[in-house]
Length: 622
Ligand code: ADP
Ligand code: ZN
Image (spheres, rainbow, N blue to C red):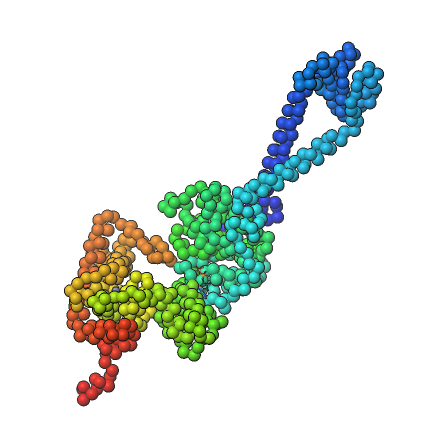
């Protein structure tokens, strides 16, 4: 961290290096042009010596003379006799002080003297001319580089790099639902922006940057804005992808500009969205090129360079922290990592509350229910859901949003709009119904509680012919092996039902099988839940916050073994799922019949069939 200190002052105050070099370049170019011009114009004359000139004067060879402050231009009679195009004049230096005297002498000899310039204003003129030339040149070149940089140099508004600055974001922590841990971590930054001296007095190193890590739509941008809003400082934002350009050096100059602009209005927040676009590791695995490296180096330099005691804090967001260059994460740079989680039940409820603050809700609205149904949705989804609901209410000519609006828009946003015109044949409908009930029944029987909120066979646009909405597994961070196995059986329960009831297999199970295979593979390669492979892991997660995809890092033999084990595991689960369904065939038929009749049934309706109401049982017993 020490070395950072040495570098910081140079960034502030002084004109930027690039302008200085531009000015220098202009000077050189203009001087060069001047010299060239001098050479060319002198080239039109033959250079002679003063004594030669005086000789010619004595011998009456001279026709015409032009006297300047330090030069004599003259034409010999010989030349003057030639046709005008071939005439060549001479020039020679003129010793100081005797201009008038010389003019007198020449006049006496009957030589025509055209001009006498006694005073030396030519030097002043010359300097003026050069100055104007250099100025013009500088502006011209400045303009050209500015265009090349996409409006870089100092032009924030007009800049193609889409830096945008908000004096006041107007967003506070109240607008960000949930995310308490992230808020807590950011609180210190706010405090610091409010009162930097409190920290510097003790000698504490101030945080320069923090990395907000989380899935898309979880509110990273919102949080950054809220930090600026809470601290009441301007908010600069740019997307990492804006730095990525074809031309080498453009990205770097944009980074420089951004920090320059920010330094002018400090204290402030600089927010770089999608920092992985610039910050991706320089090693070859993710590709790289010199433009990218240069931009990243510039970014690293600027972060080291800025004076954090001035109150600049750099926040960056990414959903792929694992690909970031290690240099970015070093102490003194983005060393703080703030995880912005996908919201849990309470978080979703709070988010819904925040977004319905300004929306008229009718009395039947139960946000708790909506929050329960939206497991896995992020803040952006929920904001979208509320807005869709409001739009629907307007379409239906109502003055307030009701529960139905929210439920329907939930389906639009999360499951895709209901596709009313897909007509399934009766046979297909039956297949879909049994398939869906197969999933639900297995989890219901295994857990002995309501596993699903809803089962439907109304087709949806996003490909699913029917779907089963599982109840959220709230606040669950660990899964046991048994739970995972149960999940596997439920996932392939759809296919099992097709098999048990119709002795057939449909394409509808493709997605289920993919998910089941993925889960089985994880159990074997990552969770150490397989006897043959034991505790050895053979896969690594690559995009933890994006799609959680993993890649295998093991020998080919192990990979082949894993494949066989996955197969075995799935086969075992399948057999047991089939058995469960066969043993409960009556329940399967009853629930499927109800589903076929109503097209959509709730989890409670299903449970009523599985566990008939208590009164009936007592009567039976009595
Ligand atoms: P990210 O930057 O993580 O992709 P954004 O901050 O751009 O996500 O979020 C998009 C929108 O989603 C926000 O403008 C806001 O309306 C909504 N949103 C996301 N998270 C939250 C949250 N925790 N509380 C309230 N609104 C949220
Ligand atoms: Zn299915």
